Length: 200
Length: 234
Image (cartoon, rainbow over all chains, first blue to last red; front, side, top):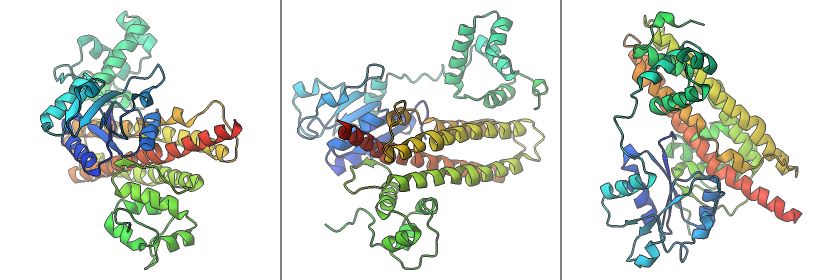
């Protein structure tokens, strides 16, 4: 299911064998949490780019003749889609230069994973995950006690803006958005005592 | 070419279900009840007042694993698709999710750890979020499309606004699942909890493809309709 970590990938190639091959290879990278979709026609590609938040487009450089980069022009506020060339035959290097990266048909699974990881610029930062700073822990305790952002700010001598930043980081680290989820986290990790929580 | 990659209207309805159990829910939400004997897809659809082309498109989309976006040559019925999507919401909100809640309550009822009760509270909070989201679709998105079909434009809304903002439902369920997996107290009824979790996994999968039907079938269809309208005005 889609989460913040999900990488949305569209695979555009006219060959069903190449498409499903790429699709299956991506499924074999479970840690990357890739959601892939196969596209076989130009119209399908246009629909997909118009309606889907795609992170990476893996496309045959010769898709429908020559892959046309014009179809990627999106509105300014949107993040640019990374485009990877899927080179199934020998491809002129000058063609490949236009792409953000290249996957060739003889790449190993590890190399494909590496290419994708580099593109989304997400390091495997295990140490950063889930470890809250002391300040963040204090904010969690306040949230769990039902304090508003303003109350938290006054209590910890912070600005409301800073409290908001802390909350964003907490959500990102713990992947918990709800107050009741945070409460459970705080109790299990002994940040608060269960008896301090008001039962409502 | 013989249609070997997809189901067609001449296939027996019963062969669809035996081929893929996920289609059970598709049938139910299209309002088709079991007990159709040896009737073909076409016949059953007619009897149940379901647009056969739309039904088959969803069926084939589900059985192909939602992996590809195809352009559909035949006319699909947006009203029929909307009825189906609405019905799916009802299935989740009124049937599946409450039954999961019941299992969670049973699983944690004898636990001395208060965290068990907090999990139910978290479940309720997530359900409210999911309900809010589905209500938004029912009341804003679908109504918008229904108006569009009548030729009425809503200047403040375009289907694109909707498709980019709708991963939330799944995210919530995934979060809930991970909370249960990580923080459930040790003294709960483990088998009952497992059963609830399996249902959540199932629900998560079901919602995932529900969203995909919205993203890959419904949205492009509405998008094309919007464009047709704009062209007609020019």
